[in-house]
Image (cartoon, rainbow, N blue to C red; front, top):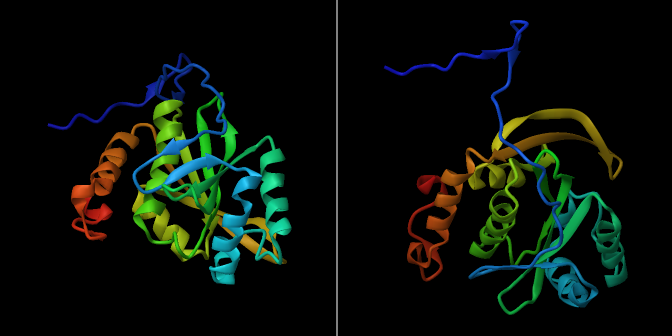
Length: 234
C-alpha cells in the first residue's frame, strides 16, 4: 500500500517545507566544458568573427525574434551585446563551439543565486548550423550538468516568451517542467512579453541526466540519425 507522507507542521500547527541539508555553494563562473559534439567556452573577442559569420551572415534574422537584441548590422554591434553580458555581474556568457573550437552559438548563465542553489540558462542564440543538432542538445546538457553536478545546485531554470513555441518544445524535450506564466513580465522590441517559466530540480536531475546521456551515446546514433528519441528514453 502506498503511504502518502504527511505534511510537516511546526510548533504552531502550521504546515512547513521538507527539511533540507544545505550549505552555500560556489558562485557560477566562466568555465570550459568539452563534449563529443560541442564545446562550451567563456566568451572572448577571439570568437567574434566566427560568431558573426554563423549567427548573422549564415542564419536567418528570425533567430533574433525572441531575444531583446539583434539582428546586428556589423560585428561590433554583436560584440557590444556580448561585452554587456560579460560586464553584467548577474550574467556569465559562454559560446557554443564545434569540437574544432569554431563558435556557432551563445548561451549564458543568468539569475545566479549560489546561496539558495539556483541558476538559469538563457540568452540562447543558436545559429542555423547548430539548431536541431546533437551538438545543440549536448551543449545544453553540459551546461546543466555543470550547475547541478559540479556545483551541486538545487534548481536550474529556463524561461522564454510564451509565444516562442520552439523554445517551449526544447524545454520540454530536455526535461524541464513548466511552472507557469508571468504575464506582462517584460517589454522588449516595443512589445509585451509574457514569460513562461520552466525548471529542473536536483531530485529530478538524475533521471533526466541518465536519459540525456543515453541519447548522446554514439551507439544511439546511426549516421547522424537517432535510434531512440530523447522523449522515449526519458
